[in-house]
Length: 397
Image 1 (tube, rainbow, N blue to C red):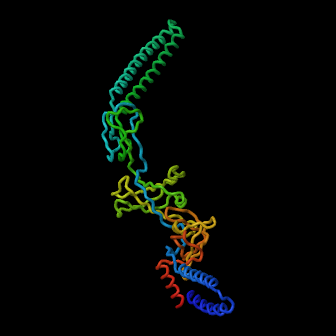
Image 2 (image 1 turned 90 degrees about the vertical axis):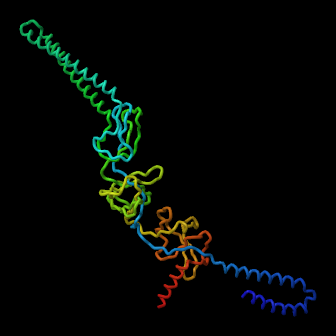
Image 3 (image 1 turned 60 degrees about the vertical axis):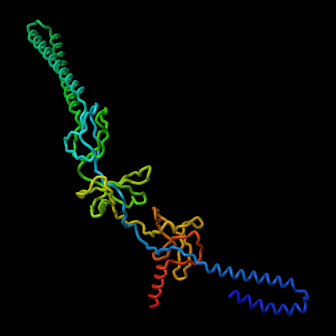
C-alpha cells in the first residue's frame, strides 16, 4: 500500500512541479534532489513499518484454573524405629568381646559385649572381705554389750560403760550394713561387665570394637527397638501449616511400588531446623508391611487442609512492573497481551501462588515475558488457539 501511494503521489507531484518549474525556476536541480530524498525516506519508513508488523513473537502460555489448598502433596522420607537408643557399659573397662553386628536382631537379656572383669572381680572380693570383717566387729561389740548388761545390775559395771558398749554395738551394726551394700555394688559392677539388651530390637550402628578401653556410658551399639515403625521426613514452612496431628497419609515404598501402607501423623516439630528451615514430621505405621525394612525410602502422600483459594502459575510467568508483581494475560481472539498486577502467596521450587488478580480460565504467558509489552501481538500455542476456536463455534451454534 505504501509503494502505490508513494508512486501516485510522486507522479502527480512531478507533473505539477514540471509545470511550475518551467514557469518560475529555470534551474531546478536542487529542489529535485530534495524531493527525491524526502520520497526515499518515506518509502524506507513504510518498509520498516511493514517489517515490524510482520514480527510476531511466539510465547508459551497456560490456561489457569483456580483451586484451594485441598490438594495432595508428596514428601520423601525414610523408615525409622520410633525409639532408637544407644547402649553402653555402666562401668569402665576394656572390651574383650563384641557379639553382635549391624542388622542383627537381639532379644531381651541377650549379651551384646563383654569387658575384662578381672579388676571388677577383685573389687568384689575385697568388698566381701570387708563384710566379714564388719561381721566380726559386730560380734565382738555385741559380746561386750552382753557382759556389761549382766554385770551392771550387780554394781560391777557403771551405767556409763553399758551405754558405751551399746554405742559400739550400734556402730558395728551400721558398719556391717555399709560393707554389705558395698559388696552388693561390687557384685553389680561385676555383672555390668556383660552388656545385655534390655529390650528387643535391631542393631543399627556399632560404635566400639574389641580391645577398646571405654569409660562408663560410652556408646557401644545403637539399637532400634522393636515395636511401632514410623516414617520421618521434612516439610517446608509454607506447607507445614496445612498439616495436623492424626492426619492420615498414604505411604508408597520406593523399593517396590506394590508395597503400600497407611499411617497417621504422630509428631510435627514446633521449631524449624536452623540449617534447612524445614520442620520434622513423623508418621506412625501401626501395621508395617512384612517386606518393609528400616532405612527404606518412603513417599508420603498427604492431603493438605483447605486454605485460601488461589491460582498457581510457573515462576517464569511472574515479572515486575512499576515495583509490583505482574503477569501478562493473552487475549485468545486477538492474540495480544496485556500486563496485570497480581498479589502472590507462597512460593515453592516450581510455581508461585497468585491469590488475587487472576481469574480461572484466563490465558497467562509463561515464557518470554521479559520481551513483552502491552498490546504486543504474539503467537499462542496451538492447543490454546484451537480451544478458543472451538469455544467460538459452540457460541455461534
